Length: 144
Image (cartoon, rainbow, N blue to C red):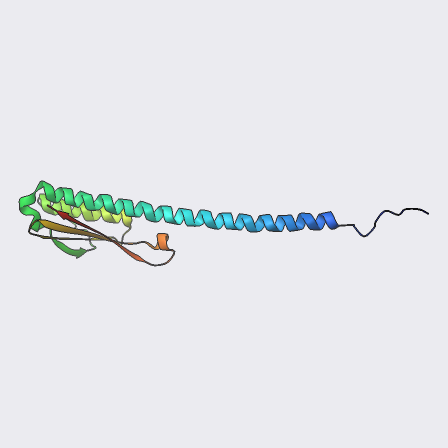
């Protein structure tokens, strides 16, 4: 009686390696998707931080000249003025320019003040953070 080696096991290790590579490929695709989402959320967070700093920029400018706080009022404006004369007009121009430099060309600003309260709104397109076309608004209310 002779013992024959099993001949039905040929190619099984190759099949196991192919399955392992397939599972590893799906894992790597999931990792790439997570990295993409992290980058997108990081960009959105950066833009929100920029908007917060820009709103504080305008609020600090208003607080420096409390007697003229009403002069800082402006409706939603998306166009940076070509020229500005005076401190208030220069502050508005610089503020709008910084909004568009940091948040994109479609960034807009709005300021409304009454009595001792001021509201600053900054608008921008947050499509990178949401994955689609989405308008973001940051509103800061403060007592002057």
